[in-house]
Image (cartoon, rainbow, N blue to C red; front, side, top):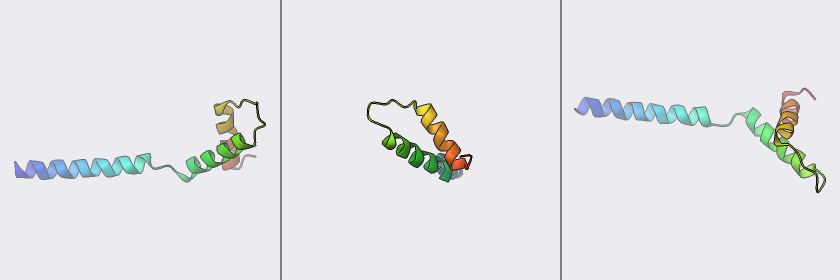
Length: 66
């Protein structure tokens, strides 16, 4: 019984660490969010921006395609 609890605790700890690593935003994700926010701030008042277009343009900028 004691061994099973130790094994369970190790598996839960490993799962928690794995989830934290998987959910951590990458540098590319941070770049996209910063550039997308800048694009939205620079939009003229009253204009509507499609979020997909904004993120696509930000991704091209972050990837160096523009």
